[in-house]
Length: 84
Image (cartoon, rainbow, N blue to C red):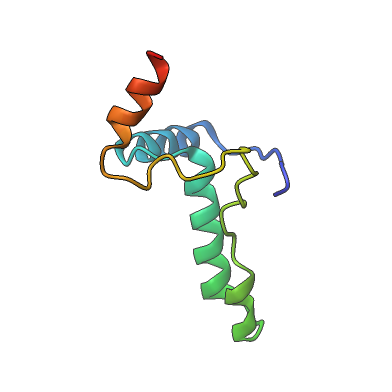
């Protein structure tokens, strides 16, 4: 991902911030979604452009040997491991 800085009018910033908060998402997510929608509507590129849309980054390896949430009793397991 590339980090960038943009300038937007105060009124638009406020509206965007309230919108993001009301949906419990970040302003960055609102901006990414808005840009993808705008480009999909106004793009003259072919249909392969949709395949290049943003996707979440791949998680790094945590070094864990197994998925801690794989079992239904994962809460109990985590609690019992902390109290060993």
